Length: 281
Image 1: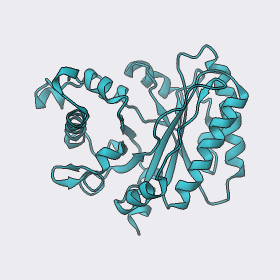
Image 2 (image 1 turned 30 degrees about the vertical axis):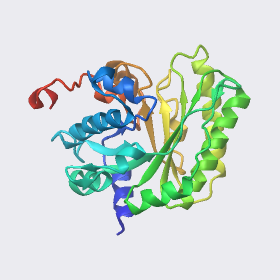
Image 3 (image 1 turned 30 degrees about the horizontal axis):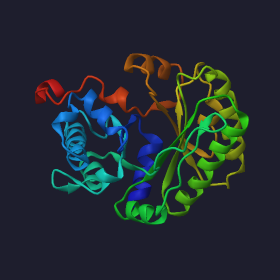
């Protein structure tokens, strides 16, 4: 079996969650602040990325972070091109930890229009995907955001996600499509209805034998995305914590059978650069 096939089997049959360790340029200062690293502790972007890489390496290197608990980890491109314990990051995750590596590929969000924020163009995507495949990355993740129950906007977001998803599949990688719904949206339940309809429409049109993963905001009602979870074109549906506290996110997750966690802030909540190794563990 190829590495991809081994990783596919792991994601398909093993229980666990996917760690979102993909904070990028805009979200890194906030992530470091939560980790009790203040902005006056780094002088520029290079030092900032060194510090967040040290945080990620400490998380991944902890004994509790292993393939028995963690199915996969989503990396920022900067992390993919660095090493952990002297080993390329993606190789360390898979060969040492048996954790499947994913890569965040989006370049941020467009300004809001029709109640949504589409993804910006992704220049050089083909080269990024080729590099990821060469480093035994299994899949990718890309995020866009829904703020209002605007059908045109939501249809546009889902169409964009699936269009880029086709490019990722063609490159031999597994796409995680992430049309996030803002948890503070006054129309959250209506957004969920429109999003589910659009997702199922596109999933039904996918060719037989192909699959994607979905990363969705935890819904207001339990088992809301059941039809997506059981759809033959869906490998896995994972949940983002989206600003909910860990306890609230875990509670909502338990109401959605077959959905697994892919938390970022919810995962790292309570961790601090100031902790001893024992406290951190």
